[in-house]
Amino acid sequence: MIIGLVHTFLIWMGDILLTYAVIGFALIPFVRKSDRTVLRWAAGMLLLPIVIYAALVGVMAVAGPQGLQYSAPAENAGAPPAILQDSIDAFIGGTYLDVVKGNAVFTVAQVARRFILMFFPRVFAMFLLGFYVGRRNMFAELDRHLPLLRRVLLWGTVVGLPLSYCGARLEGNSMSAPNLLGLLETTVKSIGAPALSLAYAAGLCLLFRRVDRLRGAFAAVGQMALTNYLMHSFAGIAIFYGLGFGLFGRVPLAIVLPGAVGFFAIQILASMLWLARAKFGPAEWMWRMFTYQRRVPLF
Image 1 (cartoon, one colour):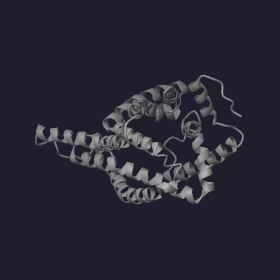
Image 2: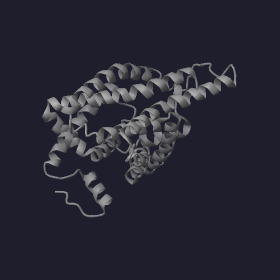
Image 3: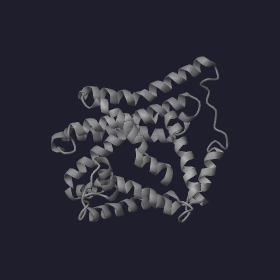
Image 4: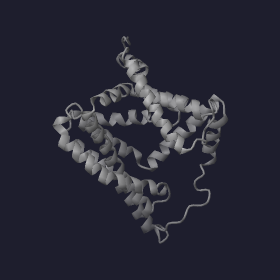
C-alpha cells in the first residue's frame, strides 16, 4: 500500500498497486473458507455490477418516461473536465511539482471513476479466483489439470472474445445516466473480460508446458514483477512527459503497440540477466526487507 501511494502521487497517476493492496485485505476472511464458498463469492462479485446497474435502470424507468431514453453525446463529450485537462497540460509541459499535483487530481478522479464503473467487485472476484487457483496448486501441476485448462481456453475464448469486443464498442455508456446500453456494457464487460483473461492464462499455461525455455523467460520477468511494473512508469515519463521527450499524445498506435512489445522483450532479457546473479529484483529486495524487518542478502 505504501509503495502504491508513493507510486501514484510521486511517479504516475495510473497506479494499480494501491487498489490491489486495499482489496487484498478482503481476502483474509476467506483463508479458512471452502473452495465452494470462494467460487460462489467470486461469481457473486462478478454479477454484482450487473445487478446494481440493472436496479439503477429500474429506478430510472420508474422515475419517468425520460428515464431510459438514449441521447447522443454532445460534440465535446469526449473532452476531459477542465481540472483534468489542466493536469494533462502539466504532464505535457509542466515542472515536476506540476506533475505531482496532476497525479493527485487524477488519482482521486480514478477512484471515483472506478466506483462508478463498479470496478472493485470485479477485481475482488479475480482475486478470489486467483486464490482458488493458488490453493489448488494448478500452476505447479499443469499435467494434472490439462482437461480443465483446455476447457477454460476454449470456452474463455468463445465467450470472452466477442463479449470483450462488444464491451469496447459500447465503451462509455455506463458512465452516463443509467440506460439500457449502459446495462449491456456492464453485462458484457462483467462476463467477457474475466472469461478472456482466464483464457489467456490457460493458453499461456499450455504453451509453457510445451516450451520450457519460454516458461523460464517469463518466470524471470514474473519474479521481478514489481521492479518491471515500476520501470514501465519511469520509461513512460521519460518518453511521454514534458520532463522527458514530451511525446504525450503524439505517438500513433501503430508505433505504441510494437514499441510496448519490444520494451517488454527487453525487460524479459534484462530480468534473466539480473536474476542470473541476484536473488531478487531491486524493488522486490527492498519490499522483502521492509516486510520482514531484517536485512536480506541480494547476491
